[in-house]
Length: 450
Ligand SMILES: Nc1ncnc2c1ncn2[C@@H]1O[C@H](COP(=O)(O)OP(=O)(O)OP(=O)(O)O)[C@@H](O)[C@H]1O
Ligand SMILES: [Mg+2]
Image (cartoon, rainbow, N blue to C red; front, top):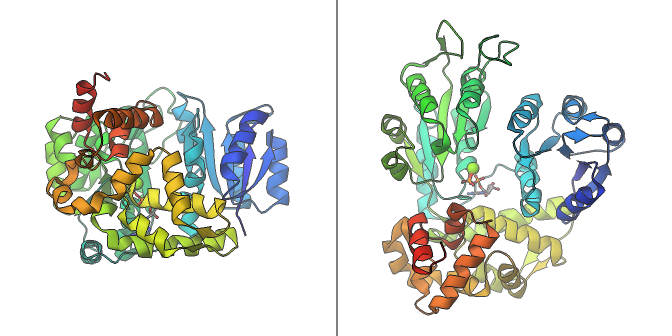
């Protein structure tokens, strides 16, 4: 049985677009105002809500507590206009699981719900590679120690997953997560360490921070390198002493929250560039778990496929199979987006190919999505050149090491496609292409694209 998502959005056009994006994976219901949404929650089993904040008969925020009361496991994702991050934070405080800024990335929408709904379905970590077996063994060993842990690795390799695994093995109480990206210094300070009533305009009551809430538990700080520098200093003080000062507080408070931090950035480079405090890095780096990209551990691809297909059978309520040829194809593909990309690809394929995933279908999908045909092929050939790719390690121009075969024109076109696909976000484009940011900049200069 597919899970049901309630779309609460007053613009019919937008609601239809949301429905279109979600419908391959979920059943959907639409509600154009708060009253209709409340009725839908009362009369249907709703697993998730996509919630616009500004509605004709009131604020979407008012629905959050009511919905959570009725269905505590319901996953609420709010949609906010650009620049209303404060509202989004308030929504999270009330119990929303995530927020999206307009314009909403429709491709990412099903994944966001899957990520949160997954938490109730599976937290199973699967692997067959020696590299992952070693990481998991180390994780088990260090899980119960009181020290902080740093998890590094490219986007989609499983850092969140490993953090939750560490938490489960630690036997600690709550697991509290904060994504440090896109938050101002003041907001991060208040969210993490709390504030005293009257300490700044708008501080109408005293609020505890996440450090307090995670006492006895785990505090997971995702995208660590995005943490503002003064907050990094405060975090270091907390790591060293277990003490912290809420905004406007007179007296330091104590918490034994265990910090697990994660980043997909090159931390050493962040230190060199002054975005990350060196002392904090040294403090965290004592216990670092570095998850290798999926292309460096292709043995993991088969068990991951099996795990995802079992999950898809459950949520789609129908058989889902994959041909051996398709498995082989996936095992040789480069996966710049790692496990997340593999799962997205399988989700799309399962939803659209009547339960039988073939090589041709996958190849077609890769051609149509962000990757051009050439890139899919170039990446697919990646492990033929494994030694060369390995030697170049993380900055390995996975794409460019194979473009010897391609012309410069092709390379230029791939870069342009990647830039268009990421709305000219160069960091994301570099990731998509599987090259370092610096390599991309060099190429952009060389081809006079900037
Ligand atoms: N070893 C694994 N076994 C099962 N599922 C996995 C494994 N590794 C990753 N996944 C799944 O892959 C997806 C991406 O993983 P996750 O969110 O942990 O990546 P991440 O490294 O935190 O990415 P980002 O840097 O973008 O935050 C999730 O759906 C997760 O459940
Ligand atoms: Mg993550």
